[in-house]
Image (cartoon, rainbow, N blue to C red; front, side, top):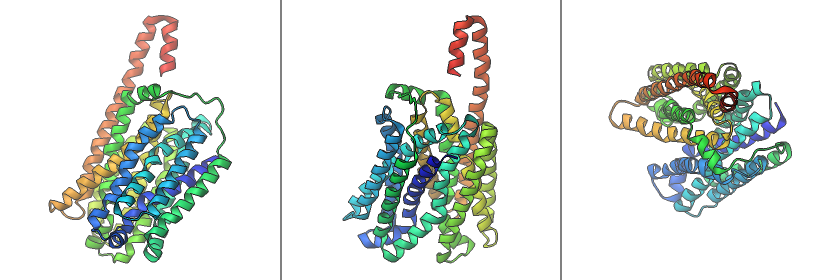
Length: 404
């Protein structure tokens, strides 16, 4: 893999750390700013909202900006957002800082995935994208636990100062290691938007919303499940969350080669396996012996779905892949918000702390249904195209080939 992908992975490490660390710092932030933990929880939502808004907006605004420069601008905005969070004088300012830090998240991964795919041979595109995402998974093993511990001992502001320093390191890595891609075809906003309206792209995004919501339905309440049901002490939560990061890393390592070999079968298999794992998690989470294993497996199978979904939308929007790629991260964050909300609703309804796993399984089955439907429509399209070509002559054959 080119060294440029290491720079993308360092950036992903910083983004992953700031995205997930707030969940462990909520009590400290609430106590320091004189608010309740549920109110402080809106800081998580503010970041997710920034991702949902920023992914399509910033990608569209930067459609004609060279991709290396765009990566630098986005990482600069990320660093500023975290500095604003570190020195926020109150709750409102911190809310704004979190929203600002979330804005470049989806756009960065969208542009980064396109860059990573262009740096390697066609048959290694999925492995390159998965390698970039390794930074995100390693953040959950090392970055989030370390940043949480730092915030608990030195104050939550110190955490965001350190994340800002990681942002500066990422900027230097991107500037030094990422080449300026030759012969970049700059697409306009209209062309990017047209690509986003492709039925297969929309079905891919819908698959992400439903399929990945199952993971967040459980992850959002993992700490409570482990302490309230499995019987772990509060101090064990940090290493249990790190186990989830270990599973994510294993899933990312497997996803690249499998996706390069067979994209749709990998997507179908990972979603089907995720549904089964979520049902099993409902029972495994009740024991100290089986819960840690279930956490690793959930992280691995859950993250196995991300690379095929990313490559799928990029393939189906090949002439203008950046906006579709970035919008995929908006879809993942909608999955985050929707999964957490539905999981919380199940708990509030009195179904038990582990009931979000069953809710997540149902959501994942819905995502699998969308994916299978999209695959059936995709297989039907070439047959229709070949029929048109057979009756349309050489010129039409050329046009259909270009659009495939």
